[in-house]
Amino acid sequence: MAEPFKVHILGCGSALPTLRHYASSQVVEVRDHVLMLDCSEGTQMQLRKSRVRFTKLSHVFITHLHGDHCFGLIGMISTFGLLGRTAKLHIHAPKALKPELERQIKFFTHDLGFEVVFYPVDTSLRQVVYEDRSIQVESIPLEHRVPCCGYLITEKPSQPHIRRDMMEAYQIPNSQVNNIKAGADWTTEDGEVIPNSRLVNPADPVRSYAYISDTKYLPHLHEQLQGVSTLYHESTYGEDKILNCEKYCHSTARQAAMVARDAGVGKLLLGHYSSRYEDERVLLDEAKTVFENSFLTNEMDVIDV
Image (cartoon, rainbow, N blue to C red; front, side):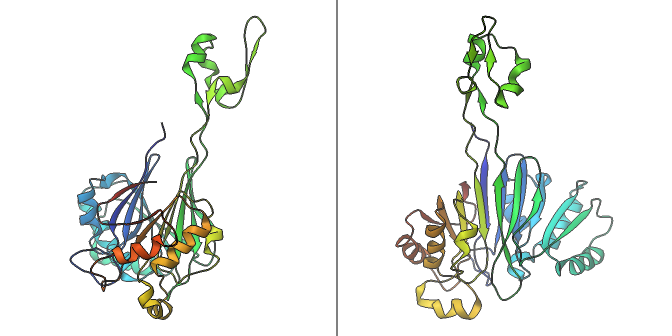
């Protein structure tokens, strides 16, 4: 059974706060990691509601330096200090945030108790910004009014699953499990070779999640997102406001669906809604005309990647 790969929607509105939506923030649980994508005002309150444990959050990835994507960061850091956090918190963000964040930490916190480690992200390049034995996070260049990138989180391939019934049937010792997972056959005492394919079930398919925050429609963006399991793509406006998209460097729901369709993704999540829409179903309807497997996001949704 595959390990959890879940996205918690903490906020899916755009810049103007409303009574219906918080601004952008998400938490991704993948393998043994808890990662945050953007950290708007109110994020720490939403984090409490989500029941995701504060202590497990290890990395925060900021897409760009507009307040509706990062105003919650210093508040959350301060709260972590009050809660007695000792583990490092890793922040990945455009380099211009570093001096501002350092000033805020110095001004607003005392004896923080843990280290905030900053990693500058070049938003103009697709590159690996974090990697360990089980996952990889890459930056995806976007085009907005300030330097901006999305993030692509991908599992690393896992090993096949041992068939315990076959291990018992051929009395294969547990000491051989790692060899068999690595592709070895088994030879019985009688000299019969049992092919590896009979000893294992296939590995779980690799899953991936792309978070595409504020950007104008990019006709070639789909080339960076081929075969992604789940895509979140900003859908600030409907086609009725396409001039606003061009002016403010945002996308319509239909344009988000075009990216999803051309990338061959599994499913599309819509978000970053303009406050002018009382009912976002109009955006969903537009997206579905292009890509049927489209969904609206809402606060406290938990999506299985």
